[in-house]
Every structure is written in C-alpha cells, then in structure tokens.
Amino acid sequence: MADISNVKSVWINGALHFQNPNGETLLVIGGTTGIPFTQRYTKTITCTTATTMVNSTHGGCVMTCGVDATVITMPTLATVSCAGLTYTFVNTASDGGALLQIKGAGATDWFSMAGEIYATTELCCENAKSTQRKGDSVTITSNGSTCWIVSGVVGTWTLETTT
Image 1 (spheres, rainbow, N blue to C red):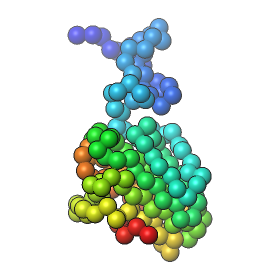
Image 2 (cartoon, one colour):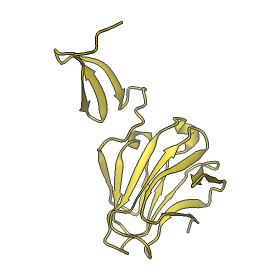
Image 3 (cartoon, helix red, strand yellow):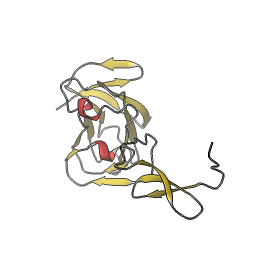
Image 4 (cartoon, rainbow, N blue to C red):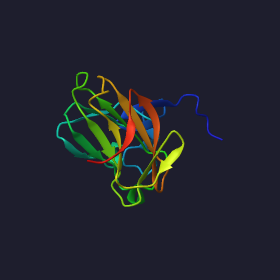
C-alpha cells in the first residue's frame, strides 16, 4: 500500500493531476487520458453562433449561450458510451432575450426529465424566451447508452418538440 499523505491535486489543461511532493505527476484523470472524470469543473465555453455541436471533450464544461434561437446538439450517445458524462448550459441573455434548445444527435438519443423517459428524437430540452431569465441553466448527464438525463435545472426548462 502506497503512502498518499503528501500527494497534492492540481488542474492542468482540464485534467486532474495527482503529484508527489517533487511535482512529478503520478496519475491524471480527465482530459485525453481515457480515464473519464465525470465531475463538473470550471472550464467555460461560450456559444457564439446559433448552431452549436458539443462533443465528449466538452464534458464537464459550462457552456454559456446568449444568442437567440441557439440550438445545441449533444454528441451521439452511441459514440460517447460514457455514463456520467455531464454538460451544463447557461442562458446568459437578458431576461426574455434568448430561446435556447438542446437536442440529441442520434436516432435513439432520448431525454429523461423528472423520472420520465421521452423516447423520441424530435424532442429537445428548451428554455423558452417567454420564461427565460438571465442565468437559467440546465445540467444534462449521459446514462452511457440511450438517454440524456436532465439532472439539474435553474429556471424553467421543458421538453418540447424541436422547431
């Protein structure tokens, strides 16, 4: 059994590094190591266009969006296959200033909200302009196979048919 009492952890380029007292890295979690880090960290990405696609490298990031009628497409779950992969989206537009929709990419990528699974690809998680307030956010987590789970909500988010 190794003594880990002097090991420190530091964030380097979006990955958690465990280092010995000499600063030598012993273990890396996250980033491109192949060891998934499923907790949120504070890297922020700003959506600058109305159509945005996210991928597995964006997992754990907070994405801020203030452009009206933004549609964000999640990665296809069949290619991600990582349970616990989490994304947080924040609507940064002024109150009533921006519609934000998040939709699945694959033919079998479904959404689950409040314990109900909605099995249709024509569905998106939506923050409508009529109820949107600056700072509204939604956190969406992969179940690793066919479902995006709405795991956290600030403000009013609903599952709607895509437009």
